[in-house]
Amino acid sequence: MAHWKRIAHHLFASLSMLLVTACAQPQTSPYGTPNYGTNYPVARPVQPAVYQPGYEVGDEPMFAASNVPAINAASYILIDASTGKHLASRNAETARAVASTQKILTALVVLDAGNLDKRVTVQSSDVRVEPTVLGLRPGDTYTRRHLLYAFLIKSCNDVANVLARDNAGSVSAFAAKMTAKARSLGCTNSRFYNPHGLTVPGQYSTARDMARIAMAAYRNPVIRDAVRRKYYTFTRNDGRTITLKSTNDLLGNMPECNGMKTGYTNASGRCLISCATSRGRHVILVQLGTKTKYIWNDARTLMTWGLQRAKSAGIAANW
Image (tube, rainbow, N blue to C red):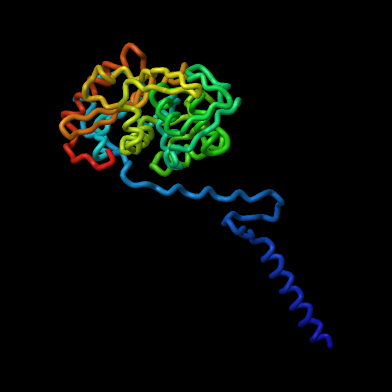
């Protein structure tokens, strides 16, 4: 009997040890995160963005800084828009505010939803924004297309709010879509919190990331048609018309320039994304953190230099 008691005691001790050992091991949650028995919620992993090839920007500039015309922007990058080749840059990876240049990303998200002839009703929450506004009134209705053109040409912040709410239900939900869209284009150092670029803590991008976004915009026929226009006639809800002048002063003053987007806040300084084409060559220039007295001449100088060095390429059907 004593023999059997010793065996039973041994088995019990071994079983207890196995149970203690098993309980000491971390339990894996369905999302792959160890759960050590607390009641804290386990965060679901962020699903990776689906990368869209064709918008990569070369890591290293093709030309030494000593061979590139000097410009005044705190950060800039010049790329061959046909190939993504990195022609020249300074501080292209520095995170900073980019102001209204991020509106081209807003436009890309809106265009992903399609249905541009759908009518959108303005709400009172949309118009509580400054300083550049179109003067929309709650209750007015416009097509997405009409609003998008006014938004890209005149940089109207009330229009940005209308388009964002229409697309995602709220500005914050739309901003999350902007960041996800940027990730899908290969932008790894950007985060967006509103559709218009007014300064908020934690909102930033880089010259390189904005170049990736600009490459995608350059290939979109709606954006290309909007940003090349120096003027646009906007018809208000009551039938009155107003002629909007583009904020891009290069249009009409540099024949090769075919558009893109301006931006300014106190935090960002003057910002400009500009594009130009000549003899089948295409360049995109991103300037961040410069001054009005420099920005236009710097753009003209550097894009002219870049057009002489970019690769000549056939224009795609949707360019």
